[in-house]
Structure formats: C-alpha cells, structure tokens
Image 1 (spheres, rainbow, N blue to C red):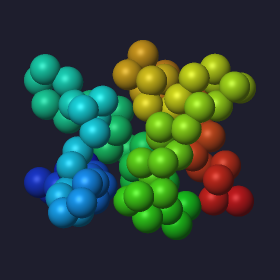
Image 2: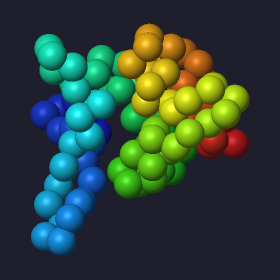
Image 3: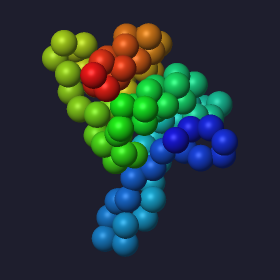
Image 4: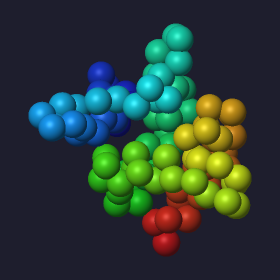
Length: 87
C-alpha cells in the first residue's frame, strides 16, 4: 500500500524480487491518487497482487486500464468502480 512508508509491490522474476510498477510513480514520488484507491481495494478484500492485477486489466467500459485513468486524473470514477467490487 501507499502511505506509512509502504508502496504496493509484486513479486517478479525467478528470484521473486519485490517490484513497484513504474506507473505507480511520478517524477515527484508515488502517484497521489493511488493511496485512496488502494485503500478502497483493500477494503474490498483484494490482496496486493489482486489489486495490481485489477489496476492493470483493460476495461472496455473505461476504456483502458484503471491505472491509466488514475494517471489521467480520473480517480473518482476508479474509486467508485473499486467500491462496487466490495458488493
């Protein structure tokens, strides 16, 4: 998760090293809209890996991926969709 010194990461490669997706970062640090979105996904019961998968999965109703919409400043729409996953 973002915040409190922790950033969402996934295990990658043969050695299962933890890695942070580059789209989670900006030139000034972590993507600001990510923190609240990840909290909503966590509240919906998502693991870190499931949250990353959801953020990077194409959604034709957006269109595009949730992570791209966050980077475009559309956090309200993405958080609303993430909240709906809990129901």
